Image 1 (cartoon, rainbow, N blue to C red):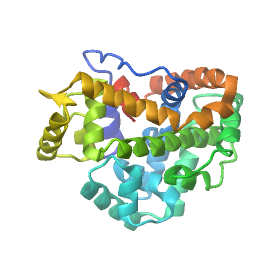
Image 2: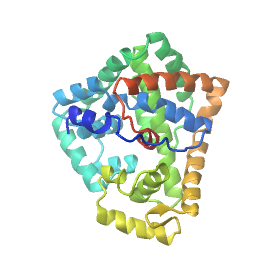
Image 3: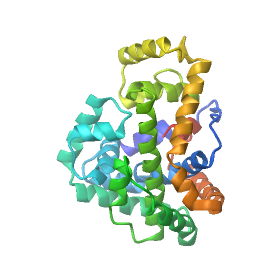
Length: 299
């Protein structure tokens, strides 16, 4: 899949507007949603995608190898475990292909340079620094236990431009929350496909509309739904009241996993959220992030 394919599939406004999903308005969730278009700039924007394409990587190849590269060059099983939400066979195959195509150093550079280049067209260095500096200061102080992707990314050199630091800070917040969310899913007895289904139904997707993009086929979805039906969390392809409550509990546990970050940011978190939301709105307007609000909420 090329970047132009991505533009066609994700950046064109639908004929019928998609309602905004209803999600909690807790500080960590608000921070996550405000930063999401910035954090994902390393794959959704054109400059890094063009740089990755020059290395021989397609969109999904670049996404997978780009995130995994923070870990070094791990076995595919480690990538499957740390990403957590993709069909293992698909993710492993894509990862093996990407690693054989481009070097780790080249991929890391393509993402870092490209994301900073793109953000430089969106906001000023001072606006970028106003968000990046307090975030990076807090993120360096966080305990990293059980945070493989966050810790690996934090161990990489921080980009030296304000826009590069903004992207890195946002991506670190994203990986920090993602690691915490996977731990919450494990504690709730969920595997990758069940977690995807709960999220897509909670946000208003049809069954398979989101989880299908993660590599899960209809037969796998049917088996997973049967298990969720038995738990009383789904019925007739929809969440039950118990299922909605279970998904909200996942959010609460994920939020709790980020309480140290919220505490370190203190009263300044609202200013960070508001400024990040303004930049993210400009990113969406520039067609560098999907227009579907459910995609922003799902990650």
